[in-house]
Amino acid sequence: MSVSIMLGVKVGMTRISSGSGGVVPVTILDISGNTPLRNACRSSAERVVLYRSVHSKRLARPQLCACLGRNIEPAAYAGWPAQHGILACSRPHAKAILRAGQRVSIRARSVGKGFSGVMKRHGFSSGRASHGSSKAHRTLGSTGMSQDPGRVFPGKRMPGRMGCEHATARNLKVEHVAHEFVMVRGGIPGHAGSIVAILP
Image 1 (tube, rainbow, N blue to C red):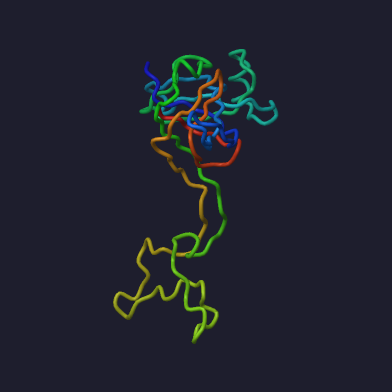
Image 2 (cartoon, rainbow, N blue to C red):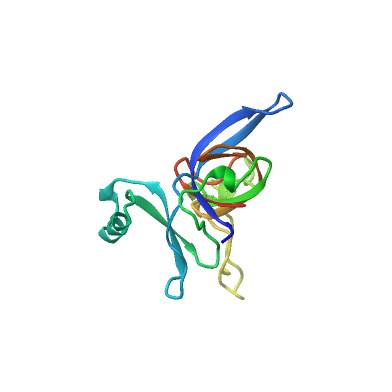
């Protein structure tokens, strides 16, 4: 089966020198933990993939028994919808799947920012800094309407939790491929240690 999704762990960012003498920022991804446990079938809506070794006490008993029954070291799980392709081989070699210069998309959960106001969350402009503004410099302003319709419409941009959502960085260039590590140009969503999905 052709590979359409590969899981990895974000290690962090660094920089490498380009051929022209410049400096290129890159993100390092560890793809050494791809070990499929279950392919999609009629009774399963997900393909389960092991992606990171963990201590045995961190796993529930069914997950731990599934690993030990296959002589696999305890590892964290990651499910992916069955309509997407998943690695058919165990612990792939990065160079057999990716190559330098290739363009990929990377999907991950963005860093959570906590409860944020409308200026940070939605890019609203601030109120006037003086001349009549009283405690309303960063506020949302009026959200209601007159008697008709007399309500706030669903989807109104308001303060709330920001970040911690699935985001995709598209068309990233693969700068370097090692045995179990991949370097892609630029930054990707998520913090160091978070799981990412690589879509070649």
